[in-house]
Length: 116
Figure 1 (cartoon, one colour):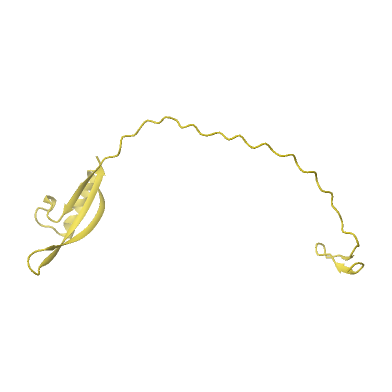
Figure 2 (cartoon, rainbow, N blue to C red):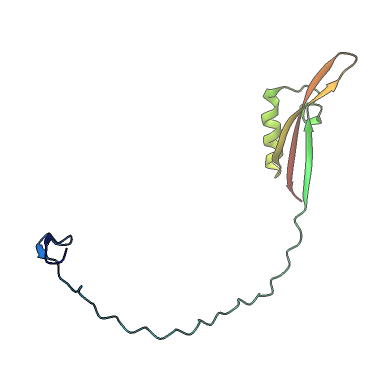
C-alpha cells in the first residue's frame, strides 16, 4: 500500500501512505515508587457490653388476657397492651391439637419477646 492515497481515519483528509511510520519518542521509564507504609489500626480498648438478655412470652387463646373468650377482635388490643410494655411479636403460628378420637382443633400461638 506504499505510495497509495487513502482517507485518514482520524481527520478524513486524503493522505499518501508513507514508507516509514511516524515514530513518537518514548518517554523514559519513571523511577519505581517505594511501597506505601501501611499502618495497622490499633484496637482501642472498648468497655465490654453486658450480653443482651431476652425474655419471651407465649400468648395463646387460653391466655388470661382474653378472659376465657378468645376472638380475633380481642387479639389486636391484647397485643397492643403488651406492646406498650415493650413486647414485640416474634412469631405467629397455629397448633393442631387433638380434642378426642377423630376430633382436632387449631389453637393460635403468638410468641413475643423483649429485652430484659
